Image 1 (cartoon, rainbow, N blue to C red):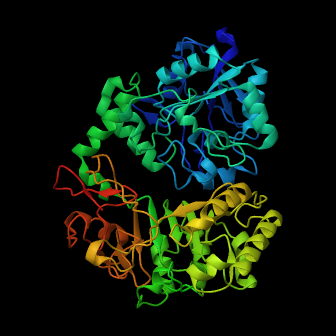
Image 2: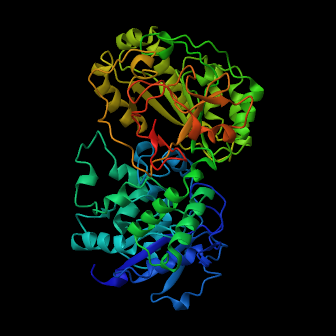
Image 3: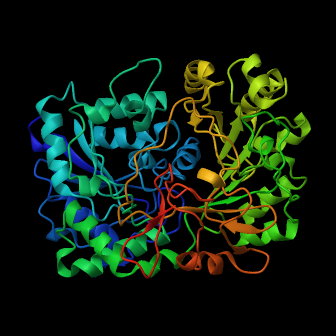
Length: 571
């Protein structure tokens, strides 16, 4: 294993599209060179790599505009029809759409490296070049750090049988993953993912891999930079262009610390950039209605005096959300809007990046049927219990058996339905994610709820109960079983608010808990969303840090910037 010829850099390079589906040209210029050139030159600088292998689709020529003779190590190509993806690729893409800036954190633990799957062509490439270990990166990971690759290979090659998969916690695009050929063949056979190997598995409880030797320690300044450094989308390409401009001639050789430092410097020098585009995630409340009315339901504590969103307004909002991850639901049940199917279709026509629906799943079966036929990424189901008694107590209705039957019906139907969007087998789409609000009443169900759904669907969400404001502004009682507020600290300068919410009457607010729009940016019926978003710096939020209609001690650690200030105000 110490022979460099048995170690290759494996670069997954679709010339015309990023791994999450965005159209982009891998030959487009970045710092005066084709984007792929930067990835290749970084790969050739990895000390123990013997050759660099570029995986691509048949008919593509990834090296067409690159002079490979200037590189110190051989560059090979390997074409395979599944490089662009297989029937499971849409499921992985959907799992990552709400975790773009995290190395992991997608559904079922999906990681940035899972975007490079399927594993079969990777394993076949390793067979073709007789490689036992691979440094895995994407062709558009133009700023990955070769130093991390060297460190990962040291760990792997020192104990190849024990350290078959090694990684770092760097933001997407800045670090490769090192894996053995055995792992990739195993993944190909089992349709497994890197996330499944690195995430919690209730069947095999173990220490989180980030606390083990397979995780190469890196600088905290890099680890804590919640940004995506991949040349695969308009936002990602723009970020790398800015970093390259900031570093000048030093970009090609810059390590991850220099890349993230340059990103922060540029953002601090240009705080207005936050409002040049809408946040990554937008929630649209189609209706404030829900069928349950128990104490765990916000509507039990506060009247929401607004009706369903007007169809025209909803369509107009979706048209403004191209390229964004959109949630239809908010405080209400999206499936109770009489035209929700038409609006899902409108979202597809508007080219939204991701679509997530929230529901109690209590609608009639004929109204649920389209869920497995439409291009929906995620369906969140507010189950909130694991026993009928708990469900009845917290939801105010005795209908858990109906919810469970509807879930099973959807699982069965999903397994046999063809996606209307691309005519491929649905392969597990939409993701169906059960959720539970953690209160004193649901605490006794929580462990079994989590174990059950982790085994059935690979993911479950446990969330804190909403108070709909803080202090005297709270509209609902705090139902937390124990104090759960994190200690207050001023958010770091590189945090950015990542989502906004539109209530069913058109009110736009920064926070999904602002149930009555008391800290409104305005109304989407009167202004474009981007115009309202641009008003954030001048928004006056009443109350103090612990007493506000919008929780300034945001439990998700998001923040918004005030353009005129040197530090952001948390929200």
